[in-house]
Image 1: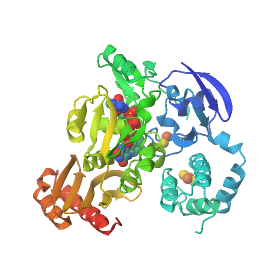
Image 2: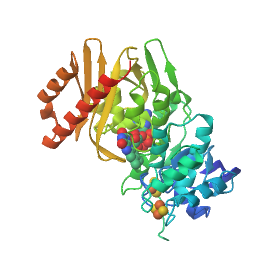
Image 3: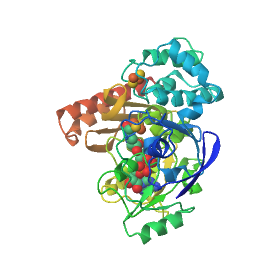
Image 4: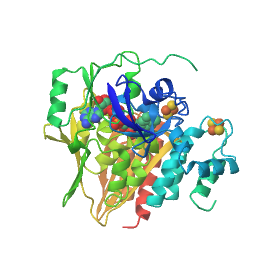
Amino acid sequence: MLINCTLNGRDTAIEAAATTRLSALLRETLGLTGTHVACDEGVCGSCTVLLDGSAARACLTLAGQCDGVAIETVEGVAAGETFETIADAFLRHNALQCGFCTPGFVTTVAAMLRDDARERLGDAEVEARISSVACRCTGYLPIVAAVRDLLGRDR
Amino acid sequence: MDDPVPVPAVPDYFLPATIAEAGDLLARHDGRARLLAGGQTLIPELYRPGGTPAALIDLRRIAELGRIEWRADHVEIGAMVTIAAARAELARAFPVAAPCLGHVANSAVRNRATLGGSLALADPASEISTFLLAHDAGIILAGGELCPVDQLIAGCADAPPFIRAIRLPLPAAHERSGFAEILRRRSGGRSLAMALARLGAGRARLTVSGGTCQPFRIEATDGPALLDALVARSSAFDGPSTRAWALAAARRAIATAENAAC
Ligand SMILES: Cc1cc2nc3c(=O)[nH]c(=O)nc-3n(C[C@H](O)[C@H](O)[C@H](O)COP(=O)(O)OP(=O)(O)OC[C@H]3O[C@@H](n4cnc5c(N)ncnc54)[C@H](O)[C@@H]3O)c2cc1C
Ligand code: FES
Ligand code: FES
């Protein structure tokens, strides 16, 4: 099946079996290995990408579901203008240790910043979105601090 | 990390534009095709041994299934509306939608998972089933037939019918409602029990599920009477711990409703 999509801002046509997981397509076929994979079941969030601007699990997305869709991976976010601010906040707050979960947080936080600029997100929503990605190292408090800092909110 | 990635045998992949076309495809494959909604449950299933159907019928191009239509006394929500969208759109008319649907999975899964896909799974621990049953939802099937949600859930155990939309009567403006769920871990996971309370003038309603017990409704005159009625029904639950969790969820849901602003 020919998948016509926008990948990190560029119109792209990819030939793939419709049932290929987007996570595998990105990593194996396109060499975009910033999208990490651990559980393949939607639980851990390390494969989180943005589909038409919303956070989604690449492991729970089929290539066939991407035709006509704008896909943004962590590589796309990293090339964008907000990335430096995100990276800076994460480093300042020690919001990563081994870094395995970090791509999932970067994409999740990028979507959060855009959504919050449109309409202020409640604290519970911010917390819920942070807990959609699993981190086994930090204990979350530094990540919460980094995100609240990015959103311009008190600790 | 270089394990070859297994890709299931490739089924035919269809993107019909109308319900009729999707229905024809289903019929033509004689039970060997699967409807694909958000894929949040179906995709891992495809990758399990023996999980590959002959065809996948992706419903996302059928505009009608993605609509939310407000009427004077009810709202009709297309089967392909995501949980995230339903939660946002229903928040004002159904104050309990935000806490209840916010318990489903995680925010990224909610962006993709749909109401139709959730209903078809008929998982007793689904907040969607409890929410819809609590609000007397009717399910509109592809052919236009209207089926009460509890009847649909019972029927889904065999083969779920093709769901077109959900019809939700609007609650009275003065109604107070509350939702509570008992979890093993604060950050989520499968619910042990959940309850949704609706308190109106002289009429109190409670919908409870727990363990493997599908949600059921109880009606009484007020909150305390609901709890008595639930105790009387508690043999519906698998065992003493589920009974206890269900009662705990019910107490909390009723307390939340009692406290809620109208
Ligand atoms: C990590 C994780 C956690 C989860 N936690 C929860 C939770 O806490 N609570 C909860 O309720 N759910 C939970 N879920 C389930 C999630 O809500 C489901 O994946 C979702 O409900 C299925 O919806 P879907 O749109 O993705 O359907 P799909 O996965 O696409 O389909 C599911 C089934 O429904 C059928 N189907 C789809 N659309 C229709 C239709 N219109 N008519 C008839 N049949 C149809 C499909 O053929 C398939 O059999 C969780 C899922 C994940 C991955
Ligand atoms: S690999 Fe996709 S959520 Fe874990
Ligand atoms: S930094 Fe190691 S898992 Fe998050």
